[in-house]
Length: 25
Image (cartoon, rainbow, N blue to C red; front, side, top):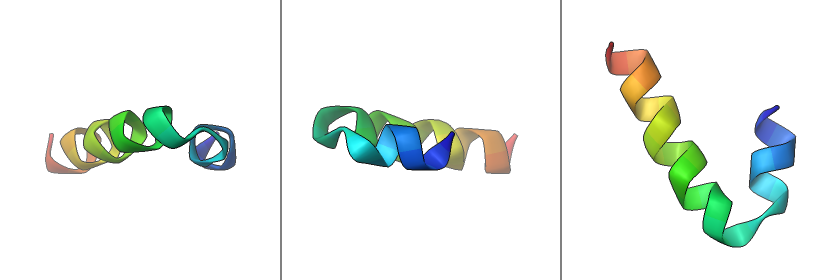
């Protein structure tokens, strides 16, 4: 899943934000 998001540049930023939110939650 992470690799797929990292594959796209614009989506990479959203993936990072979503990852941080999930970790904080």
